[in-house]
Length: 69
Image 1 (tube, one colour):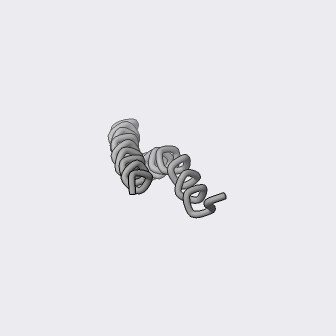
Image 2 (cartoon, helix red, strand yellow):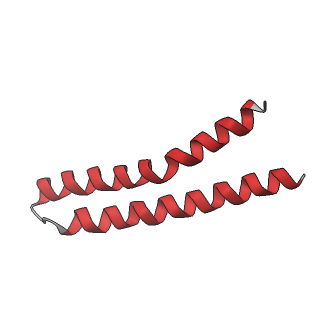
């Protein structure tokens, strides 16, 4: 069993939810602090989704390229 590949796959599974969570919590607290409800929450959550998807795509392509070698 290749433990390195297993670790890379588990990291891929956590990339998208963690990016969304960071954007969500940052937006919530900034909205609370600045009184701009719900704008920063929505914007930073969408940015977290975009960031997570980009990271996920890069990670999958990296794993795919390493399988070809």
